[in-house]
Length: 154
Image (cartoon, rainbow, N blue to C red):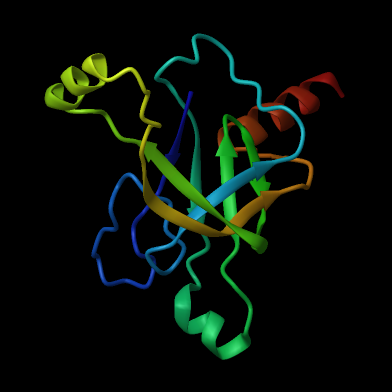
């Protein structure tokens, strides 16, 4: 399951952020926390489950008001509003390093096993928390159809 992350800088510069990271104004990677269960219909493997965006008020608004940008997550016809929270303890994103073929030959000759090595890829200091109930999104076409049906019944 994939959540499409909109990484465009919303301040109007038109510059794109790296597509593999969820950046929140800087080069920070953020943790995504959902309360409850995320249900998506159909095959979930490799499919887009939702779209994460940050409000368009941007960094200038945060500097003027002291309020951070508000994340929103759209999943199907539901919209979740969240908030950005600082983690009490930072987390590290680690990647296990693969051994070279020479290293593998050496380990087979040695009886002692060497521990695996890891590389730190990022430090996570903030999380995006979505704890409120999702709001249903209603489009104009659906609203008009519903009002027409109600008018016919009366």
